[in-house]
Length: 107
Length: 119
Image 1 (cartoon, rainbow over the protein chains, first blue to last red):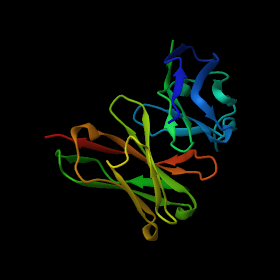
Image 2: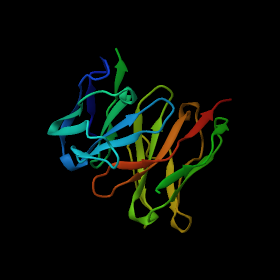
Image 3: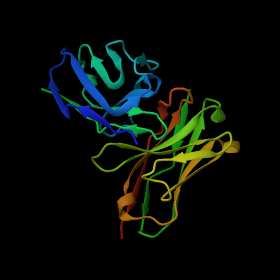
């Protein structure tokens, strides 16, 4: 089973700042099968990025994904108030797994 | 509009059985898989397994294999997650999600079903 490790666990930033979230895999992941999700309290997760770098429908362009192999990154170029949430990466190999999440909180 | 509507919250006792549902609409139900995801209180997301509604082929996370059963009835565009004998540790929110066959991404999610198991 591929283990995804996200860092940092918590990111304290101010609105307007840039957020960089990391997702590292225990073994190589096909870029086609790496996704990022946002979850706000009391809500279901929402797909942000699929295929490592493609934005899902309706996702603002301040969200971008990059990476390959074992290292992937989600970048939020300028944080808006509604972006403070928990973010998860997910790989879809033979047995899909999620990372443990990164909480982006208001500083 | 794509929608996944899950059945309502459940309160059960240990040892009881349970089946929760997820009804898809607004798309071709047999063209996408359905995945189930667990979220225990205050914790992260765990992928449990998925089903191809076109032929009911399933695969499960090793962590959930043998503990739950995923099924689907394509005639009513509904997927199910069931337990034969609940434990207190099954207390969690359970989400179904439409799963893209090509990318494996979970592009639409149900609202979640809260299952509480307590004596």
